[in-house]
Image (tube, rainbow, N blue to C red; front, side, top):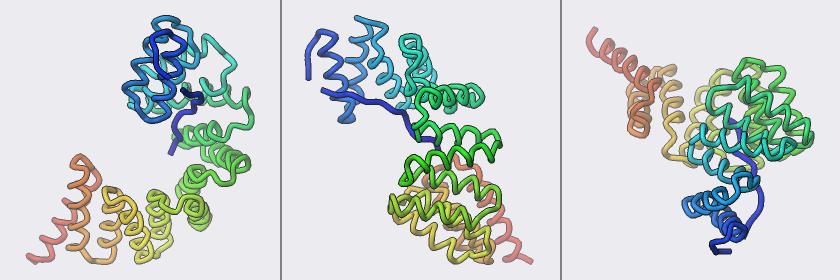
Length: 274
């Protein structure tokens, strides 16, 4: 999983651009995004090259999932300051989210040239390389992020995911557990341990991890789907069906759960009517 954008600054309320920016940053830092974005617009109307306003409004657009707008804002920011590692990083993040990984990699690499000690850039570069199947390079970058920040829970979790894809499940579990040491209520890490345990042939232990994920995040359709898949393997079809149905109640468009439920219902019908 990639990590969200990077920004800094903060603080009071007025109509002049300088005060508008300070107010916007304060609202932004307190999660009041609607007020913040309106004030950033005031700043940019007065000065379309205001670097911090461009970057912060771009960060809001990422939070809103409006990646094309974010991309344009970070491009404008880079025109103002081509040596901003954070702007290159956030542009890379936007490109990754838009399904343009090759372009994203160029900006992550530029960010790291400008700021070599930038663990978030290593993590997000690694995730993008992973998307392209460049697993060895991804592992190198996750490890670089962790060398800079050993308590980086997302990087531990992401490195675990690559190792799991490569069938190195014991190593993957070690990194998932490292992530949980840092962030005990990390539902995704529990779910990922469950997937690795299932691959290692420990279905009951896998279910326990998925259940821990659900205890942290009850609305977690992937965990329900995973429990159901394990139950199918154990021949407990009716219990599996209940979990597939719960996954679909949470996420009606969840295609895997729908397909799995259909197969399970067919299996149940076949066993009920020989």
